[in-house]
Length: 471
Image 1 (cartoon, rainbow, N blue to C red):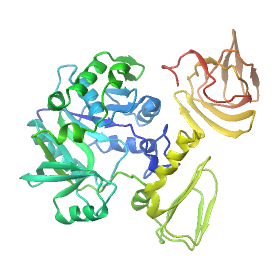
Image 2 (cartoon, rainbow, N blue to C red):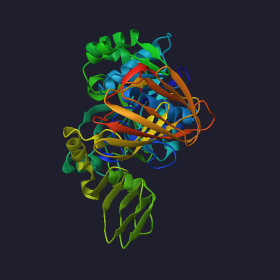
Image 3 (tube, rainbow, N blue to C red):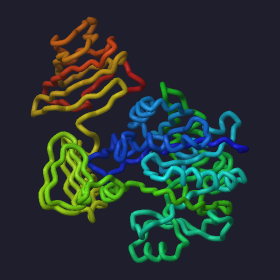
């Protein structure tokens, strides 16, 4: 092989159609939906038989600690985690990776992979990548066309042109999500593929095309990466430069315009898990076609997807439904209308409901906290601090806090004092007092935090000492 493969993992996205499991701050790529690994971790795992160098990850600012933690859990090494201040679609994100990959005068093959897709036949995936390498080395921009198994209206399509070899064709066009009649025509013709958003090309070939067809994106991303700086595990690009960049997909920015784009067909049991019905289709089922997760009892019911997170869910005499229970929300939807869940998310967002944004259990770089009770002037959280970790030093102007240690040891900073607390001991943090908690032990610190006051939002935080630029 004349050129190294550098995976570029696109780990942004919201996955709103899988609400309430997928939230804006914890979207579907970070969920374990079909195995013990998350979709992000599965994306890396399927590369094990493909020789490659450490990957680059592109993610949103808000997801940075989740990405880093999931990589640490699987002991996955990486070249860089590049943070986008805001999403600008795929063309700019890939440009950041291409500039980063080229910074040491290297010119690897960038294997661009969405982090939230499922591929059930990794051998077929490996074979398609192997076939694409020759074309990419010869300066072709390769996209992978998923062999369609039915006329799906929720995917974009790729129209193939002239045959190059048994599995490779020139690209005619990229087509937006069609209606059912058009989708049926496409699948019947045999000349169309689903657009899976997977690409392979030299970093230099991509940047050359970008400079020719989208010079504004090229310039903005060049400035953004040139002025980037490291922050712990992350590479922060220049915000002003990147936000001046237009948002556009690689398909329309580059792939449709260049003369050297090709499509390699891939028949690898691919699924983007874009809805609950799609997840049901790839899940293990009982003899009645029910996919069951968690504490679920089913009687006289067929072809349902039922997910329980925190309590018993019992159903009787229902068919073709999606039932998803989390700690703060329950979704019930007809399987045929599963694509419309995004309307619920829009409603929640427009009405500033927290349920669209995050779960009650929130992960932080130092651990996590889980809301277990709340009222008008109080809120109770179960807090876990990992061994050796410490929260930021901060204060609040509208709430006081009581901390009770359940297990482990807490090293608490309260104003100018440092106090060591063990099990069944507590401390009171008045309004306006700077504080932090550290776990100096070798086991997790578990404590109960009781907030009281007239305003209990997470916005009431003044950070005095930042932990990795905030948390």
